[in-house]
Length: 144
Length: 116
Image 1 (tube, rainbow over the protein chains, first blue to last red):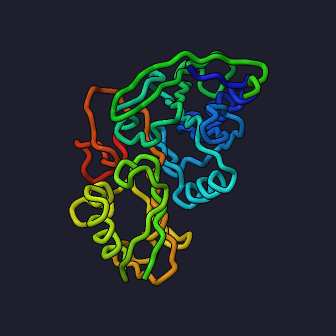
Image 2: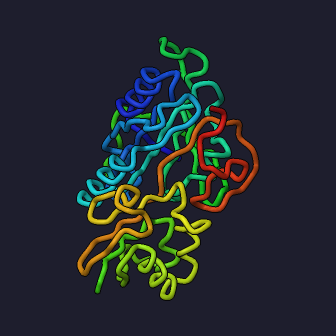
């Protein structure tokens, strides 16, 4: 199960809506081993594409360096699908390389940049196996 | 000629769980060959058809090796090498195909985004 703070959830959704029709992407880092997504980090989609996303290689390096210095890991890795459902694509599955992360998919296909609900779903992707999990949105993350 | 190599989570199965290992080599390609002798299998996760895999990033002292000679990039004692899998994907229709880690989609050998 993914437990995520309302503010972080809203920030992911806002980013996805803003970048529609291109895919938006980012991470929510948290203390290593804590499973608490505490630090929202919006990333630039270097592919700038409606069907593909990729963190810029220099940004990726900086992000991992920061997380390393803070003893953090990517608790959530999110991206949006802008024309298809919020389910990992073949490409998503093939390239997923953080077995400990919650892969969050947001679909903006219904309302695009406009107000309105989005699909917001979370998965574990390990060795090519996708397992959907429940998402619980809370006002504040529980203490450790 | 000791070079520290930082290993991402997904490849730590090859390093007994170690986050960093030490290797030797005057170039990235020599270093990877040296890593392979101590951590068999790791080379195939980094290299495909004689080149760095499209969705693997390698950095030497904070520089993406793609900008400094790729596999031929030179190394010196004390350099730090960081390996990071790309964080990438995209909303192509999902299927049941299983892909090896780090590999681009099999119907897309060039490693360019699909559906473009």
